[in-house]
Image (tube, rainbow, N blue to C red; front, side):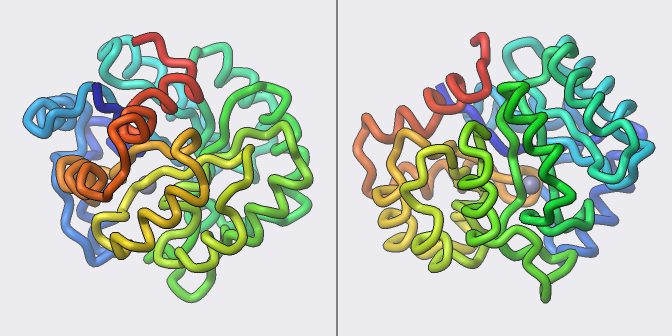
Amino acid sequence: MIIDSHVHMFPDKIAKKTLDHLSQIAQSPYHTDGTAAGTVQTFDRWGIQAGIVMHIATKPSQQTTINNWAASLQKEYPGRLFCCGTIHPKAEDALEEIDRIRERGLHGIKLHPDYQDFMVDDPQMFPIYEKIADSGLPVVFHTGWDPLSPNCVHASAKGIKKVAKLFPTLKIVAAHMGGMRRYDESEEELAGIDTVWFDTAMSFLYCQPEQFLRLCRKHGADRILFGSDCPWSRSCDEKEYLLHSGLSDEELEKILWKNASELFSLSL
Ligand SMILES: [Zn+2]
């Protein structure tokens, strides 16, 4: 069983346009057609059984529409696609939307500090973190470098650490091994904190194998999730990278699906 815990897709009508737009920002190619059907087909070729889909509202007005769509995706692809919902920190009803995300049966909440324009340790975010912690849902942050704002790291390992200390019951997923392309800082600041999970997304592209193994061992295989950031990296490449990283079979099984199944409360 392999669960890709970091996947993106878009409604059919806007998938191509959105991928072209994001691809231009990231100066990076994409590897699916961006639709749900296309991604599931591609997963079949790549040997991926299920995906956890990350949705991001880039405007306050989008959050409810996106979460409704996320809930419909889960119904359409039972056992294949599970979704994290989205809230926009500047939406007036952001706190209420957290309740609605739970009621819709979504499995977590994704926040992207770069695309949603906030610093991860900004006190204005604290009521949101408190409410998510109370909901019991995990929160997934994009962490580290991002091509949208390459000169400003909105979620540094230090910032995430501060949030983890202030909200000890908040289950935090620090995507991209705790900081994309800023793995030294992640190793120093975040590795080993037991309310933080890492996903492995983009490690194939950016993380040196020795450092990847060191980070996994220091943080602990119990709190690492296999992820790709598909369509921006191919799940099959990220999977091969992980399989050849030097981790034991027992560690790999946790990372490939067991941890995700437990953290996101999946019924597989
Ligand atoms: Zn992503």
